[in-house]
Amino acid sequence: MSPTTPPAQRTLAAHPDPDQLRRQAKELLRAWHAGDPTALARAAPYQLPAPPRLVQAQLVIARELGQPSWAALMAEVDRRRAAALDDAAYTERVLALALGRGYDAPRPAQALALLQARPALRPPALALLLGEAPDDLPPHTPLPPWGAPPLALVAFSSLARAGFEAALLAQLQRLLAAGASPNAGLPDPDATDRPLPALYGVVARAQSLALVQALLAAGADPNDNESLYHAVELEDRRILDALVAAGARWPGTNALGRQLDFDSLPNLQQCLALGADANELSPLDAGGTRPLHHAVLRGRSLQHLQCLVQHGADLHARDAHGRSLAWVAARAGRPDVLAWLAQHGQHAPDNLHDRFLAACAAAEEASARALLAGRPGLIGELSPGDLQLLPEQAQRGAIDAVRLMLALGWPVSVPGPWQASALNQAAFRGDAAMVALLLQHGARWHERNGYGGDALGSCLHAACNEPVPGGDYAEVLRLLLADGAPVPEDDELLPDALAAVVAAAAPAPGAARPGPAG
Image 1 (tube, rainbow, N blue to C red):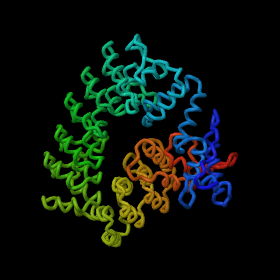
Image 2 (tube, rainbow, N blue to C red; image 1 turned 180 degrees about the horizontal axis):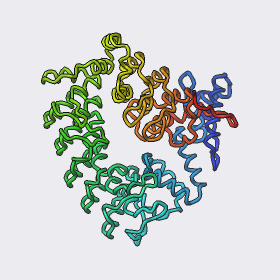
Image 3 (cartoon, rainbow, N blue to C red; image 1 turned 120 degrees about the horizontal axis):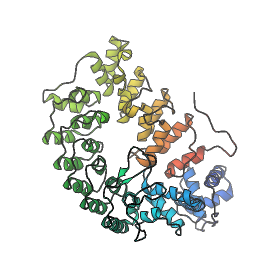
Image 4 (cartoon, rainbow, N blue to C red; image 1 turned 180 degrees about the vertical axis):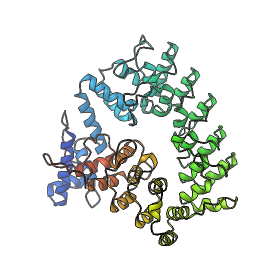
């Protein structure tokens, strides 16, 4: 076969087995490494770069089966497998993908693919996801299988992002005209505290300005303790404008704190211009911080801090724990902030423990070692709150500080933010270098976090639902598997790079799975 010869086409089975396809890709990769002429001929049309990798073998398998990519092949496999589900299981699957469920974000493209795979099955709950429903559908009747009111299903449909916004808007307006409440809620089976407000659905799941405006015009309560907080996460800043114009109030929402989780000065300026309080104290369960303190903790620039001060933030205000801004800056390893504060007459605490913590946070090795040499038992004297500096710096990606603390003998598994160890923090960020460093110093994949999961779960959840820009989740997964973490069995929704790692690590049929490392 010449390099320009089209590859041989194969036919995808009616009920394809994804594990079998993954095995085929691994077998092809092994054959490439062995120099098998037939395998090399299969790869030739694609002019793949050396060295051969699993993702390249997956591409060849996908192209031979008539699909443009491995992701497209897996989506087609998922579609065909869903077609074989009974009606109840199929409906549950589509709802979870279209609406999101629990901590899992919606996946509109996959939901749409499943809906298109079985067009004849359109119970009202599924029809509403597309903006379709019988004209005589009662607006107040809860619909199975989730017992959701029709308007909530429309409001939460992420298919608004997949070309169905106009149809969903028309359906929303029909239901409102028929008497549906704009404050209807979605009973998520995995979030049973209370039904989730419809306005939150159109903000966070549908992400549709038109649907937001329609609900607000109909009287939806913008102060639902959800919508404003999640609006600051969106690229479409007109949604935030609309909520505030409709009467959304900032106090008590921690929405400004959430905005400071993102590195965008223009978006911060918008929040402040819309009335966010630059001095507001967040609830204790959200840290009990003020915006200036939170900005420092999240690594925001001096320009962010100066913007807050220009909008009334008090440099000398303390947080709910009585901590000054200089204390927080020292704890976060921010000499730039400390220098700025010194110009305003504010200095960090100068006792031994605080100076040691500040030196560790700033990765000032000479100072930290000198203090420790003068008091060799210093680390053992630190409080549980002081020891949290390690996971806090891991969360901020401060690898030099973490490396220094580990070298000094810091406990590696101490919990920090969200009761999670440094390894959990690094895995959530996709920080492969940090994960490798922590594992080298005794961290283990099964360290718990406050949500009942472990570092493997932190990696997978973030990769699928909240990926940090620049995170290398595939490499983090490789490292955790090498540490003894079990190979994920349900990898259908994993990004391609992680699915490739799972495929490479999955044991051969009948082989025992590795147990956890000691």
